[in-house]
Structure formats: C-alpha cells, structure tokens
Length: 270
Ligand code: IPD
Ligand code: CA
Ligand code: CA
Image (cartoon, rainbow, N blue to C red; front, top):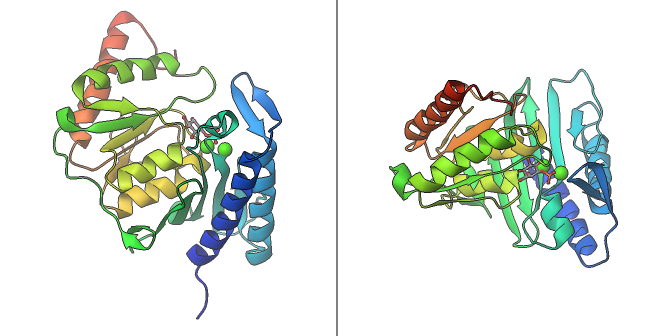
C-alpha cells in the first residue's frame, strides 16, 4: 500500500521527537534570536532532519520551517514545520514541547501531525477524516458554558500585544475555571481537540505553530476562527479555537475588552 502524506509526516515527527529527547539529556547551548526569544541546537538539528526528510520524499513541495531551513517552490503543497514548539520549556527542562508538521494545499491545511515525545502522544488529522490520538478518534469537550471551561493561551516571546492579551487573560480568569499557559501552542490546540481544554487563543502566532493544531481542532468537531469570530487565516496573526459551544460567549468577551480599551484610548497593539 502507498504511504500517505500523513504516514510519512508521522515517521518524520517520531524521528525528530527522538532527537529532541536525546538533546534533553545533555547540557544545552542556548542562544537568542532577540530578547527572550530562545533557540537551541536541538531546534536547529531537529529542523535540519525534518527538512532533509521532506525534501527527499517530496522534492517539489514547498517547506516553511521556523529556523529558516525551508524552500519555496511553485508546488500547490507546502509544509509548515515547527521542529520544536515549546523551546523555552525545553531549554528550562520543563517537559512540555513537541514537533509539529502541517501540510497545506493551496493555503488550506489538509494533514497535520503533532508529536509530544515526553508523553509519547501522537496527534494526527487529515481533512475530512477526523482527529486522532494514537489512532483513537478524539473529540472536543461538551462544556457548554464559559463559567465551566478550562482555557489556554500563550504569549509570544517578544512584547507585541502583551498588554492586550493580559487584559483578555485577566477577564477570562475570572469568568472560567482558569487559564493555563503551558508554552506550546501546538499542544494547546491538541488539548482543545482532545477535550482537555475547552478553548485556546493566541494573538501572534506563526503558521507553523498553528497549521496542524488548527486542523486537529476542526476535525475533532471544534471551531477555529480569529478572535473576532471571523474566518481563520493560517497566514494571519491570531487564532481562537474552541469546542464550538463556548465560542460565541468568548467572542463577546474579546469584543468587550477591545471596546473598553478603545474607550480608554488604548490600541490593539500595545
Ligand atoms: C512558541 C510556543 C508558545 C507560544 C509562542 C510560540 P516556540 O513557539 O508555541 O506557546 O506562546 O507564541 O512562539 O518559539 O517555542 O516554537
Ligand atoms: Ca512554535
Ligand atoms: Ca519552534
């Protein structure tokens, strides 16, 4: 039987995950892309491995990879690769990180894999075929009210949008069971897909952070938009993913916070 794109992505993610685990056992050299934006040898080596494997299997496909090792082509297929999502966690020995690969066809994500090597959790999805954890179908939660929801968010490793998201954080903390900020956007999205979290949002993410995870949420029966509730754009800044049931209630809060800020003359970029 012919291997699917997803099968090959899974093989590669496993191999890269094993490499990250090896690096986690040894002293790490950390460098900075800019203040608070860390990168390690593990990020670079994992990316080199993934890009080499993808190039060998799909020489015509485009590859957009976080550390810059990708290639543009005129193929309608493009891989979005985060070789280590959760670098800050990894660098501090906090075991919440993953490898994630999403394949888009003409801008729409059609397949995705997220592999967490510390828990050996493998999340996979193909458009139209459901979302899976270890081959078992997963579904978003059934929580119908924000007041009973467990939420997640993240903050980019540089200052932009911090204040706005702290206001969202402040408001939602009081309106829900709480908010987790675990440090890996791809795993946060997987937790929405598997029903561990009821919703996740973040204001400034790159396409490699959200490609696979957004598909997982959709295929698990959830809803993915931007924080205004508009159509999700992989190449846009923000993402808001939920079980669908708490979506409108949360959009209302995002809107109220923005209106409060506008009333005070605060911008959306502060
Ligand atoms: C980061 C993580 C984090 C999110 C940041 C991302 P990285 O990715 O996903 O949870 O809050 O915005 O940049 O740098 O660890 O690949
Ligand atoms: Ca990332
Ligand atoms: Ca990364």
